Length: 279
Image (cartoon, rainbow, N blue to C red; front, side):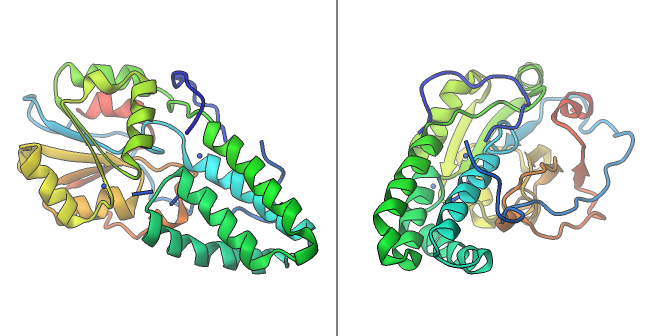
């Protein structure tokens, strides 16, 4: 976990990834979780709904606060240590990280501590015998800094969430480690605005259908808001909800999927502040 303290409402990039229900060296090559191009956002957006209260469902990481950039920077530093120790070329190191990533997601879920477990796993696989002790120490050093890092609220989040809570019903729906995610929410100061908070092991169609029932949402008047096509947008649409996609430049590559830009239930906006205009 990060150091104690509140998340700040600054948009400065500070430096996500495998738990279960984010000071680094330059990367030796382009980071593995770099984002891809996003669909264009219209110059102006129509107002959604009919003026009556709506159910607005929010993702957390990289929607409310920065997160994955922390993983990117920790992974870049870890890869640089492995390469410098003779563990292999960048392609070899990256492939080992991606393999371990899938294994750790299955065994540990999503979150920061699972990423530290991933670094230990890859070190055990690739480290030359003569460098093992030094690399083990480097993993613990990188991991300690990574776990202690604080997240920053993204620009306009605090004011916009407060504004929306005054006229709509807000739900927080995120995946990962409940302890980690709820701790971030507490530090953010946003918790009082959400009438329902849920941390789930995975965000798929079945999870959204359960959420509708548990939180007693009005499916016809509910919007999922987030940065991930794979976890926020596509499964929500399959579950019969509407969605607002807010692209983030550091979205984890495993969260990338094609979205149907022609789906009338989908709205794409360029920034969080615009939620106050469309809702």
